[in-house]
Image 1 (spheres, rainbow, N blue to C red):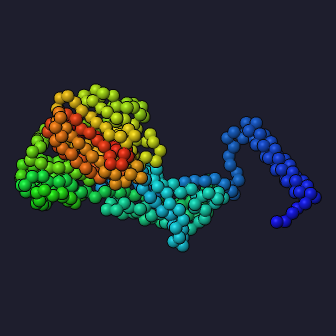
Image 2 (tube, rainbow, N blue to C red):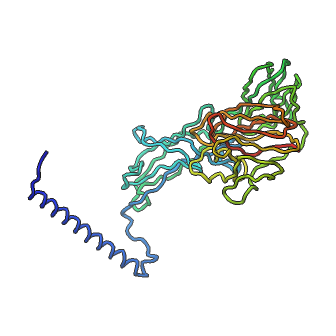
Length: 398
């Protein structure tokens, strides 16, 4: 190892001290100039005259939304999506950076001609590719977009484009699942405006999964004592176990939706016993944006601002001494890290377990779980790996 020796060490100290002194003088001079500007009222609203430089950073953003009406256009009924991966490629087609959309639906890429932490630092053609989840569709047909960035001195980041990226609309597959109990066969009918679009036989004692077209609005099941009807939502649905031994809510029954938006006017509250005429255990209501990077809390919200979740991922319940009908509820996984978590929903009438279903959850889209049970007194919700489960729009009959 090279040894500076006493003289070398002294010289190094002198050089460092001189450099520190020079830096201090420059800093003091800059501070005095800034102080003079701040002290001069004429500079409070001065018009900029030098547009030659740009030293700031600006986010160039890709916006992704849940295309609720599946029309490919961002409208008032659509919602921002959180957790969607977007990748950035430079002019040569080389991968540069990636970012996930935040709670507001924006994947942000810092842009600056001077800041080293920026990922976009030079003019040219830049390509933004939204990673469409498996089985989903980009209804807007623009999941891959390119923009030409130009040098523009005086702009916030030194780079500009003539047009911003267009919103990207995603929609999950419309899929209906469930299981058939008993020995009898049944027929599944897919309808629109009362007209049958297609029919499919359902085998006894077997699970089923049916893709449903975008224009369908209702499904019905007939035969085998399994008669029921469900108005379709924009989300995948699961009917649970269809059993002739379990009474089903009538098709013309009056439905009551609990959307949890009136639990609190604030961002967070444990649901108190008596809310909506039910007893609640281990369920909290919170605003969809209360937790940062909370994909399932954002994507699982289908109405208003609030959702409900199972506190600490532990089992939760809602119940009543008087029987009520459990029609349906929207269920989601709270985080992308728990994508594919398995939920167990158990429904009781007094001391009798009348329904037990396992469904797979996603943090990207709610699952419309619709057992349509005519009479229950208690519903227990739990997850296999103790991740939080998100609920919204609980539908009952009284």
